[in-house]
Image (tube, rainbow, N blue to C red; front, top):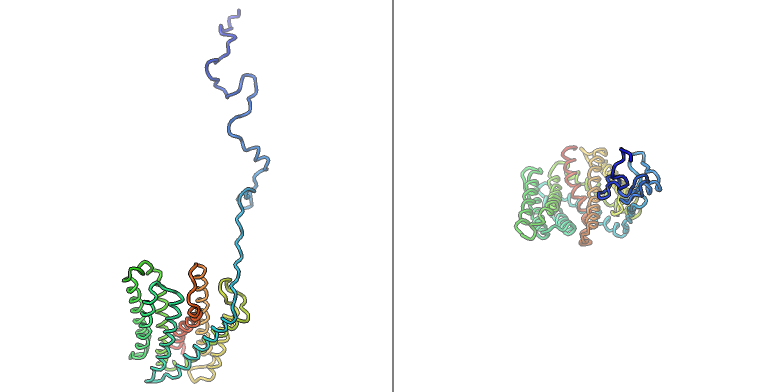
Length: 349
């Protein structure tokens, strides 16, 4: 018996208690395979090292779902008969306003005022039916009253200016908004109708600037030049769309850039020709400049109406009255050309 041998030699140490070492291992034997969570290092080795792009972003995994590419939007078909009809309406509207301006004279503004009032009623009908404000009938009635008040103020005011028309526009807008606030049904959507009411009221009053312009020296000649340029620009733009609507400005809008640019250029050319036949202070250069401003304003307003209509259709709103939608563009073009003609006559001539 050796003194260094323990009396418990031959017994397994920690027989009753768990071994403090790794589970499943014994002395002198290599550890068994791990039973814990599987290590994904093997699968990662099988896939190979993870590569990075130059920017630092990892490559997309093969099992990651691929997002479908955006579908190409089918361009809206351009209907030639419709473009020709709108071009004819724009030409007739321009001829009516230009000939009506020739009837205006000192002390004889009422005939021209009646012609302008008829165009204003067409504007109210087309824009209310196309934009469909919440209180459609109320907005239409208020706009008609504003049109009559604006024409009366333009004829009866002592000094030819835009201040009376501005007061009428502000009063009509407030009246339209208050009328919608009173009605409980339309009170919820009154915020949506603010822009529509403002556009219709301002457009109606804009036609009244033609009556005020006819009372200014050289104003009737400025009306002739600017409205002729606007009418020619709108007509040529629509005729070009019927023949060659390219390049398309947007797939959802049936208009082409060639018509917009060509219409503005044709209107400028016609205004320069008219300027060579008019008396001082008109010259071909001055007439071309004011005609260019009016023509560009008209074609851009007409184009904006097309974009607005496409936006309403894409939003899921039902289409409105056919004739109202297509009268809206030329009427909006002349509504914007009227104050442009007044501004150019006052500032440039």
